[in-house]
Length: 255
Length: 138
Ligand code: HEM
Ligand code: SF4
Ligand code: FES
Image (tube, rainbow over all chains, first blue to last red; front, top):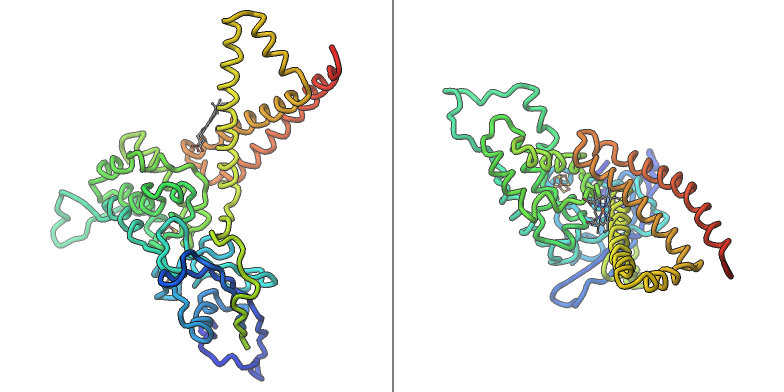
């Protein structure tokens, strides 16, 4: 069903009439070569209820305006390329179904906020990834694993950080955070989520280094618990909960 | 077929739409507004109270300017702000320190609103009757 955008959009097929709707998208466009500042542009597209915003963007790009620029790769909620602000909330375009939106009104689509806007729906993700790298998001251990074996971990120890392993680095959380909008130096929820993933991993031995990094003035204490990140995360990660756990670990001095 | 109506019914806020956050975001916006408001009140309050160091007459002169309905309404707003800030402050402390705090943050927000309404129902009528029964004399 989700591939419907590829089919010819000529009337419903005789054996299975599926209703198509005219949906208006108002997209915040910005072309650095011609625009001084972003502008809103509207497009009408024929959509099925089971289509997604990503399909609408494809239809616009392929049939109406080839200059529309956005990122996407997997189209199935895994690669994290297409976080954008849809009707005022951060979501993945590939996981936002037309039927879940009110199409009697236009749908507003714009780039995520707080990162430098490059073109249309594309922002410069580098500051976001720089914060991610800073928390050392990789397993560190001074001890050798058992010979020819993996590092053993109990089910309970694995469950301790299960939630934060699900992150796809889409930046929906970080760019929904009012603190991050006004203070780009703040590590942001995604970096803290990915630090949490290793801080609470029983096989890792660098928790105290990461806790030190996040005890910084621009670290976890910037969090004002607005829960925008938790509401925005397309993976359902309890982001604010993870940040609170890191705050507590810093106060305790250990994970 | 899809018609490009580009440019016909467009702009509105070129800066982008307002982020549609939920209870968590708006509770924080209110917390900051009330926090800053309380701060400025305290600043003035320390100044007026310090008048007593100059002379009791000076203190009385300043305080008597507060005894009018406008200030009476202002006091109601101040109490409303402090009560919200205090209850929501406890909510934020629980989110940070209680292991289930983040899970119940939305429930706790509505509990804060409930406690705020109850407290204001106890305070506002009494206070406003007091303020307005003195209007035009006494
Ligand atoms: C009645 C007792 C009070 C309690 C329980 C309380 C609690 C809190 C808490 C927990 C925070 C942290 C908010 C966060 O992490 O986002 C906070 C922030 C703040 N408080 Fe209070 N507070 C109280 C009284 C006051 C008073 C008297 C003032 C004014 C002088 C004040 C001004 C502020 C300000 C300006 C903030 C910063 C808001 C922000 O960063 O968003 N508070 N309060
Ligand atoms: S925590 Fe969720 S919202 Fe944030 S980057 Fe990871 S997947 Fe995206
Ligand atoms: S395109 Fe990969 S997550 Fe949406």
